[in-house]
Each structure stands twice: as C-alpha cells, then as structure tokens.
Image 1 (cartoon, rainbow, N blue to C red):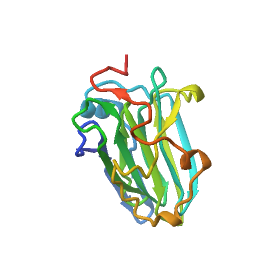
Image 2: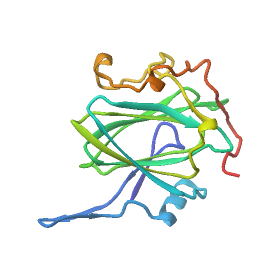
Image 3: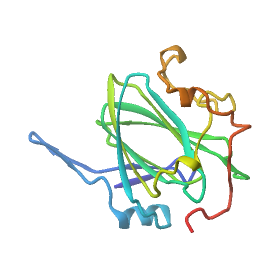
Length: 190
C-alpha cells in the first residue's frame, strides 16, 4: 500500500497494490499495521457501512461531535465519486480548507478522514456503491452538517448545481460560520 499525504497532512490517500490477470484481481483494502505506521496513531474501526447512489447524488457535508466524533476510511466498490474532506477545527492552520479526491472502482483509492473534519461525496458515474469504515457508532444527538455549497470552501463538485440530488437534510445545513466546530489540538481519540 502507498500512503499519500494531501495538502491537509491528516487526510491521507491510500493506494493499494492491485494484483490482476485475465481471471480478475486481488487487492488488500486494509492492513492495521501499515495504516498505523502511516498515520501515527491507533484508529479502531468498529463498523462498516455501504451506500448505493445514482449520478449527481451528493451526501454531506456530515460529521459527528465528540464524544461520538468519527474517523472514516472510505472507498468505492462500483462507479466513481468525488470525495471531499473539510477541516472544521478552529485554530487549525488548514481551517476551512478542503481536500477533494476522485475515488473509483478502477483506481481503488481510499481516503482517510480523521475526526475534526466534515465529509461528503458526489457521484460522478451513473451509479456508485460507496463503502466506509468508522471508528465510532452513529449518534443522532451528535449528528451535524455544514452547507455543501458554502462559498468559504470553494469546492468544485464537478457537476452543475442544478444536476445535484440532495436530501432535505443536506439542502438545509447551516453555513460554515454557523455550524458547530471542533478545536484544533484537542485529542478526540482519547
């Protein structure tokens, strides 16, 4: 596996080695020792999730507050998405900045999004099956979001806004200025 630091050092792209021939392929999607070595701290993933979405579906920007904050390790099983992580840690040198990475069934890349970041993806293919590991359980009381189209982020979703498909929840998220945030330097993994 190849671990690639992004413009926000805590957000990491993971490129697996793909072993393929005329019969198909084999790929190792997670290995705890290599993962720990690359990010430098222990993340205990406790749940796997999967969603299926059609072209233009945008899910996010979502996160959970402490003590139910979540790290995510995301990948695409089928199709192609633009995956986005936004730093919402007050005082961070990259506060309000984002990383956008194309994940697909072809490139088999994964993205690690640590606690303290909002996360979203938009489907660029006709259909996508999206899978992710989380290190904390879902908590409705701690579920939060921020407006996907907040101008402070400057995210290019690669799809015209009128073609985006959003839930009512995601259409009505607070602005970046108004959303709940994390504090930079606080260890949310304790």
